[in-house]
Length: 470
Image: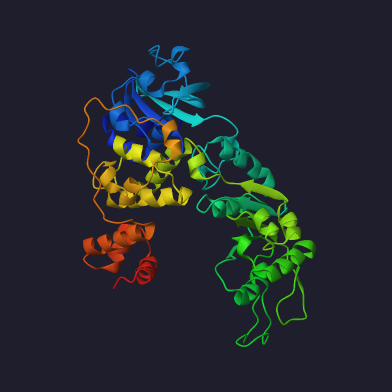
């Protein structure tokens, strides 16, 4: 530990607020203890990993907050050793779901200028293979921007590093909002092609007549309005990766051209006699069942065989178990930092509602819900009244029985009811209301409203046009 870090830690014991913001930015769990082993501060990653609430553990013994088997197996803090050296051990803790979780624990003393111990710093990270290849941006569990620790996601994370190093075609399947686009981009970033372009095309977003030109390019004069040459996305992705999302919407005639490219890596622009060899890796994704589409004659079987060299499936959020807790904490930390708000967590009532919801929109919907809640939260905890009203009217998820409600606090706060809204409210309704509320708070100033929402001005303008907000 450098002297500069030691000085900052020493300052913390005299002015606890000086280090809090910095510790919350770290992707590893950190707890600061006084010399008697009582908790003085824990950061956001520590809360996410262990499931504790920082406001409820201040002054408690580390033994009761970390729930670690090392505590009674020689921990110098538990034994109250006056002088000890930094220790790094493999241990187990009991997390918020009452499951055993292997961790790597570091215990380090903090001393003053005279060499006297004034406190202790503990760091906690999850043990196992995930940390060996996780992108630091994702925190303790994940790969790049993907976050999760369920068995299904762990399997995907184990496969991705080796798959990324090949040039084989990849088919990513999963429901809308499960993170297919993010997985494709992270595979590109982890590959030898990371310095080359990553080009994305949504096959369902363009009409058939434009999609062929968009993908393969065209020569000047190839059709009415073609007043100049266009390279096409395959050529733009030369040396890198082309990601075709919603491949199930690709018309049959273009499926033939895609199959031809996968065989010889040559593109033929519309209206041109010249061909171009494109060094492009192709990754595709779909929420459709391509095998059923083949049986219905809507998708070519030979193309499916060619694309299905490597298949990665992203499960829906309702099947990912405890990932819901990790993701809600991950998004909370992301948005409270972006919006510069001091929000310490969720109320017990909000947690019960969040874990009982079925999330038909999967991770994308959860992210939108947390963004909405952080925007409108005017307290230190997100409560029912800060969540979109439609959550309270949705049927309970069959998975919710597996996650019992947390124990009632010793001094429960009064329950705040959600704001009543008539009718069924979609996410579009919620987003429109967010925009209107932000415009009211900013007195109609669009830039100020965009800042409140965490958007750019052009994004706000586009959404106002979409929702016909004058």
